[in-house]
Every structure is written in C-alpha cells, then in structure tokens.
Image (cartoon, rainbow, N blue to C red; front, side, top):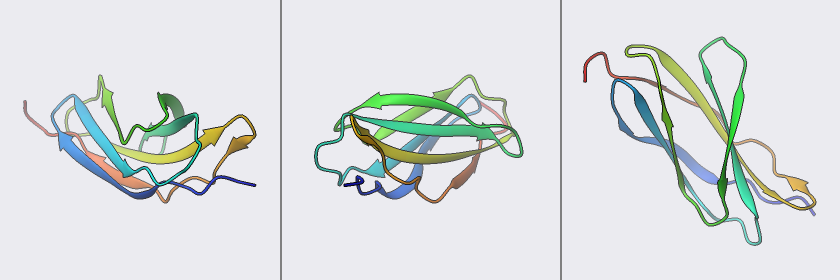
Length: 94
C-alpha cells in the first residue's frame, strides 16, 4: 500500500540565504522524507531527512530569489505522491 503524503506543507523561517520548509508528519511507518527543491523554473534537486521529522532548512540560497518545494514520505516499498508545491522568496537582505 502506498504511504499517505505529508500534509500542510508550508514555509517557516526565511533569511537571505535559507528557507525552512515545514509539514505535518501524519505518515505511519515512513523511513524518511524526500524534499524536492529548486530555484523557480529550474530542475529539482532532492534532499532527505529521517523519519518523524517535520522540517527541512534549505541553505546556500541567493537573496531575493524564489524557490519551490514539495515533500514525499518514503519507506522500503517506495514513496508517497508529492505534496502540492509551495513557493517562497529568500529575503533581499540579511
């Protein structure tokens, strides 16, 4: 059975060089979460965080640039569908 996707994807704290992505972990039995992130209109890169985690901080960003995020819950059998994307702009100043 496919895992349910995480819920309530949103952004948390934002600076000129980082964006925190937050979700509600409602998936029983996941082994990790995959976070797809990209500069708007570019290709996605993927980062992984451990089970029972509800946030990821994307660092090394360019001030004033917009980034998109989506999250999937995974276990040994595969991953859930991706959440709907959220978009956030890194602050223009520190």
